[in-house]
Image (cartoon, rainbow, N blue to C red; front, side, top):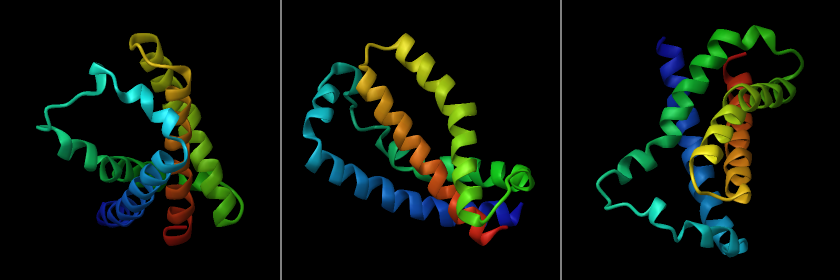
Length: 135
């Protein structure tokens, strides 16, 4: 369990940097995508903002545990194992969550697609790093 937590923290730091760097770059290069967020659905009073910033660490702990439990199922070099891990996570977790989110909330297909790509990227990066540090 100690290895899962330590790996989760390492992945959390990496995902935090990539996520927030990617957010700033995305806003800079694709500002039209973020116009949809000017919606009362996404307004916050700021009291829960820390939960948003902790997301990278929450997902990294889950992915670290998932990797530790199922890493033997992924074959090939560490890059291929990481990519397969990301795609398995995307299929098992992201597709159902994105489906229910789109069906229950007044959001656009582009928004849901961007969230799916973001989650797939997170899981793939985590998988590649985990395959390298915890083969």
